[in-house]
Amino acid sequence: MTGILPTEYCCPLCESSECEPYFEDANRAYLRCGSCRLIFVPPTFWLSDAEEKAEYDLHENTTDDPGYRNFLSRLTVPMLEKLGAEKRGLDFGCGPGPMLSVMLEEQGHRVELYDPFYANDPSLLEAEYDFICATEVAEHLSDPQKEFSTLFSCLKPGGWLGIMTKLTRDDRDAFANWHYIRDRTHIAFYHRETFSWMAQCFNAEEIFIGSDVILMKKRGQKFSEARSM
View 1 (cartoon, one colour):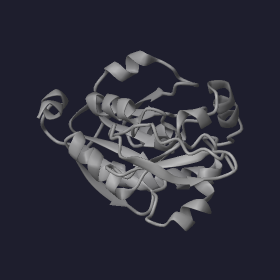
View 2: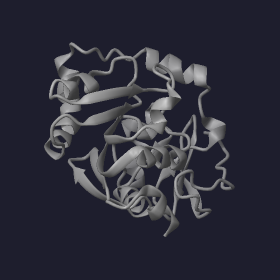
View 3: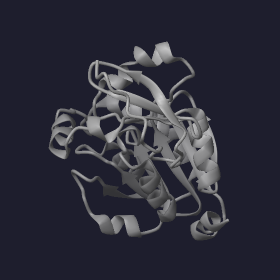
View 4: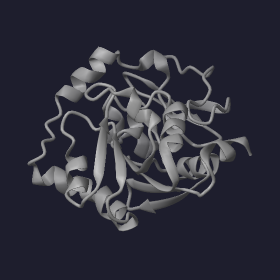
């Protein structure tokens, strides 16, 4: 056991100081925010950038893997239902094998690729998009407030943000035995209420699909106006 559950940290998403020890295992401690319900791992337990990338390099998701295509279809199918023809999008956190962009481009859309390790072009985070996809990305974010703020600022009014990440439940025992927390690159775990908080914060509407897909539509107001309200 770690023997220490830090309590001095604010929530990395909503910045609330109402964070309490939630769980600890042999490797890490986990805190839960009482405001947005995010469960997060404090920085002292994070992997280094080199260690994190080494873990990602082990992934074997290729563009000709039908199983991986089927997995991603849980996001692409409902996303495509929301899009018209020939939209411009961003695959945020695309990884080394960007199958999702291939699937969307097959349907006539243009998709840019961004990843801090494999496609690090910061200029792409200054452009505007009709849609943004982040599959199996949210759980890796060390600064979700900053990252989601960036994504919503890049999203055009009326645009869609599609997220795929496993959601937590109100069950501490289930969390303790959850395979998702065994991956040490996973440092943020979201509840349905977390995304409801985000929808209010970023002036969006949320739709939950199954157990791990969330679509968020940015309302017509410009991002800067919504944040100043």
